[in-house]
Length: 487
Image (cartoon, rainbow, N blue to C red; front, side, top):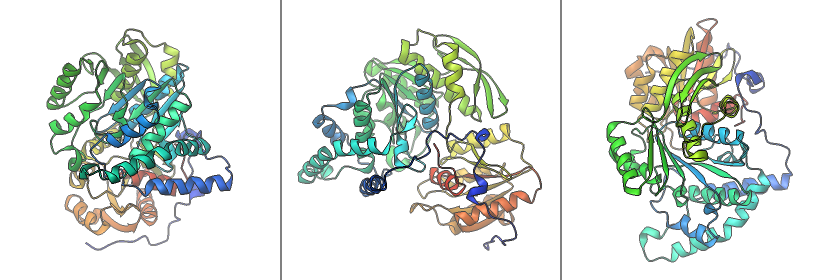
């Protein structure tokens, strides 16, 4: 298959022209404000120090190091109640929904999500906004001496399993818990990084444990079957917690039920205790009616696309009910309407440009891509849809490509700046097996690939669009290329 390249006759997507209007749903609250250059330089240095540790896609299976730092610091993770989330897909969107509704009740919230799109501070939010640079650096200065002590202990340990410095993700988790305790927050809504049992966030115990749908992903680390993955993720369900569980494969649900029985947790399952009653596609999102744990909530507007987001909203509402009143006390209509209407989920079927429309989605496994495909079919009527696809090496690219084939007229294959990205030529060969060579263009550099895709979308006349997907990194880098860096 020969590479095809943009011929330069169409204008490229310039960042200045590409910034979407406020009506497109971009959240402007997190714009970086002017900061003292010296402070910013130190922040960049600290980020580099953290990034220099073991990457988060290579976690070490132990809670010892994080637990030890927390112990030395006086257990800041015990200073606030927590809603803890795991699952395979939908974790970040559901986390953002829960936090947004809780914030609407007047509580001071902390939110921890991963990975970030543009700035490490996105992972640690206070009252819905990324932690400020000064607060981030203050938390780092508080945590660093204890991290160094644990690093020294680990390197001196005779057990080879413990002869490892703290990882990138472990340090960020420690920063988050320290920042939440210092704020202080009334509640923290915390998404796991990976798995559950051994995830660094599991040093804290959630009074509510949320499990979104589980499917195959991260097989090298979590196992190759749904049962193995569910067993790992069930670890966030702690003694006495309320477990709010989305729709699962039978084998996953069996394991989650057994875990609840084992630790005397109260199980609230979607389809039994709560769920989606009705939904209708609308302008800029969807109108949904939900059954919560304590009441029914009709006619709610959710400014996100796709049936999967309606189910995420149902899980979020049940989790909030469980946290605030044990599932016995209904939420007020004003709180719920305002909370859901104010939800954003950057990088999740997000429109980041008009004319042609450019959509980014962070789907990075077959289940996520299938949800994306169904949402595109339901919510959009493009005359021509061109994909920009960049995938990481450890992902199931073949099944992702298979799922995308019915909705994409053409695919521009590229790569992100991630060292884990699949080489475009190899990914292009795989895509051609399902799309045919005439529907595939390989463009090694992502900025050029985006321009090529826009030109191809315009070939269909008015109504053409670009869908950039394949990884969180793909969504992030396309957002940045188009001048969108708010979260």
